[in-house]
Image 1 (spheres, rainbow, N blue to C red):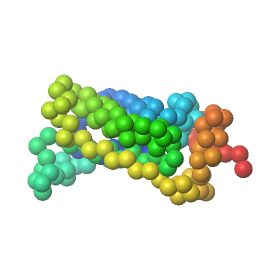
Image 2: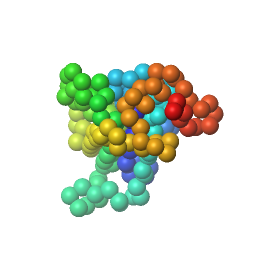
Image 3: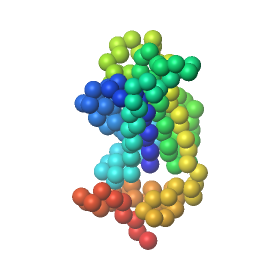
Length: 162
């Protein structure tokens, strides 16, 4: 399940645009991971938004003239959509869609002229090295939760059969 880290300069996006962007990024990553988009998988899709103070984002050692964005997407290793057939094509499509979503949230109309302002890094977390719910989770654990559609309703945490 994805973990999204979005870093951007404070004030680069309107609050409503930022909220929509995080929702859209979640939908996009779930799609390209090749997993179902349901309440259970969404409960495992976390996003962290890091807004940095004005002047904290530099390009070439100087303050950026236009906002720049960094998106880290961390996914479990072995996902069929990312590492399966056509994996490089799917990763390219994911990066492209993330870039377009970020720039559209800013209100950019000429996407091609601004693609250089969005960097998207994909990280695969090795099997056996993702801890949640107080233990190491494996792909079989993630799959079981997603397929069962289990969430601890209203409590905001995940439940797994032991």
